[in-house]
Length: 227
Length: 117
Image (cartoon, rainbow over all chains, first blue to last red; front, side, top):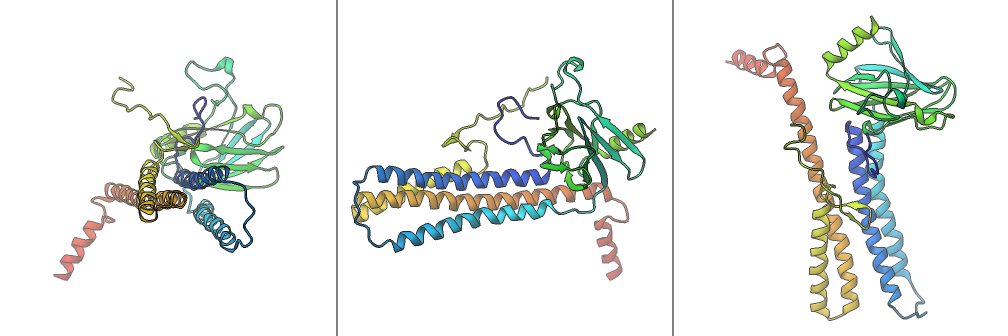
């Protein structure tokens, strides 16, 4: 989860999020180069005398056309690579459905056993000591780690969005439509997210909690939950 | 005891307010090498031509080119290392999973050697 006053990304827990963080660093480095150049040109122009002696500007025109094109290519290539990587679906081990309601999520695991449950936020008054306010839920989404998981996201009433920042997932939940996303949780842990599409009065109070566990623990959980 | 031996999270130092050079891999080296390249190229140009303003332009251009050049080189190596790490991790896991079974690649290799001899 995010710390208070956190400005950057949360630690990546999936390969896609790792790539996104790398791309973000790359974009910031390009931005630093451009800002340095602009700062220098600004200082240079402020210290020069004003003159209108320029009549022909072919070279500068060429430079400030080609240079931005190069910058755009530097940014576009890795961006498109990650975009297409995010769309790959490589034989998921598990498919689950996440359905947005006002104001909770419900989940369905229907691959092998009928397992469905609702996930409500734990109110602050009922929160045990040490747990996170407005983030904890009564029933977490449990997934096996290091396994490709496919999530089908939809909604029952209004628009919602199923988002877990550390897994690099954000998918809109639209009534009457099934949106697909996938992720691989590379390490065990608990990953928090929040609804990311305005959906009414309690939009801020329908969090998502994904718990990634070893496969044996996941099998135990699913057999206990479905019985 | 919890927390003993854990390294403290490094404080961030953000260049121009947004690039965290301490925590972003390759960023610190890129900026340092860029500064060095800028100094060398700017000073070299000045010593060769004695033109101050043009030397400043060369220095800034050198900074940007050296910084970005080292950045791409370092990130490429980092990406290759990450891929090798993932392959190693996958290989170690497969070895543990399949050791001794009919899927063990070492068993298949020794089986082929025996059949050849």
